[in-house]
Image 1 (tube, rainbow, N blue to C red):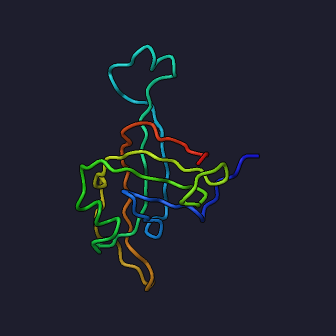
Image 2: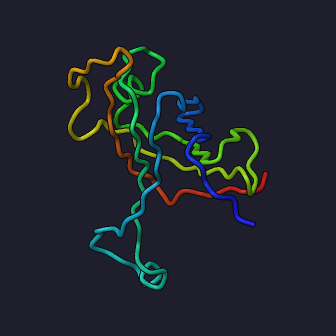
Amino acid sequence: MATIIGTRKTILKVGGTDYSAAVSKCVVTSDKTDDAFVSFADALAGGRRDYKLALTLRQNTAADSLWYYIWSSAGTDVAYEFWPNGGGTTESADTPKITGTVTITEPNGDLVGGEANRSSTAVNIVEVEWQCTDKPTLDITP
C-alpha cells in the first residue's frame, strides 16, 4: 500500500543541516529541457528533463540560517535531502528520501525586505528555485 505524502512532516536538509523550521514550501519540479542537443537515448526515454528544487523560506540574517546560506554561498553545488513524510534518519516506503545536488542561486526578484503587516508574528519570505545537477534519487530502502 502506497503512503500518501502529507503536509506537516517534511524535512529538508541542505549541506547536511536541517532547515525544516525555516521552510514552508519544498517542491521538486520537472520540465522538459531546452537543450539544443538530444541524444537517441534521451529521445527514447521521452526527452531530457530539467529538475529543480523550489523553496519558500523565511528571511533571517543569522549566520546559521538558510537565507544567509544563500546570501553567502551563491554559485556553489550542495547536496540536499528532502523527506516528504518526515523520518530524517532511515528511509523506507513510509518515509522515502529524495536526494540530489543543487546549485545555490539567489532568487529572481525579492531577496530581502517586504511589505508592512500589522501582525507581530508575520515574517518576510523569499522564494528560490535551484537547478539540480542531475535527476534526484528516490530512496525507499535503508
